[in-house]
Image 1 (cartoon, rainbow, N blue to C red):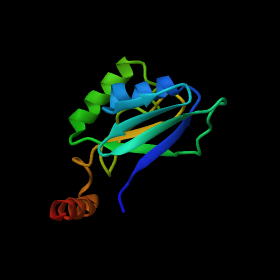
Image 2: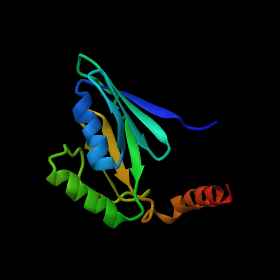
Image 3: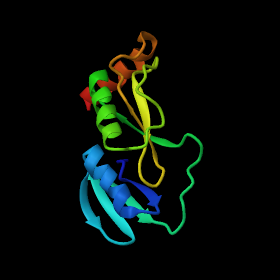
Length: 135
């Protein structure tokens, strides 16, 4: 089975799609008044218009991983300078450095790295890297 797409509601399709393009490296395939389709890493992201404020479940979020803590810090500084609402500061966590921010429409993002994760968490990351290399 192959991962195909993510689909999200938004009360502002253009602003939400722009966040994915401008800050997350997605390419815009289509945009209209009711929907946008974006591409990233072999799968689609669909943003669908809603005429009401979208309420997300507590702590629902998308996580994006970067190779180093320095890159996470740089992204934090970039997004903050662009006026993206930050839900946390940049901080070190035992599973790796990270921060949380919010896209237009209220979708929560976690931007992180595993590079500086505590040793007890590294074994699972290394097993996954080995499994990916074997494929």
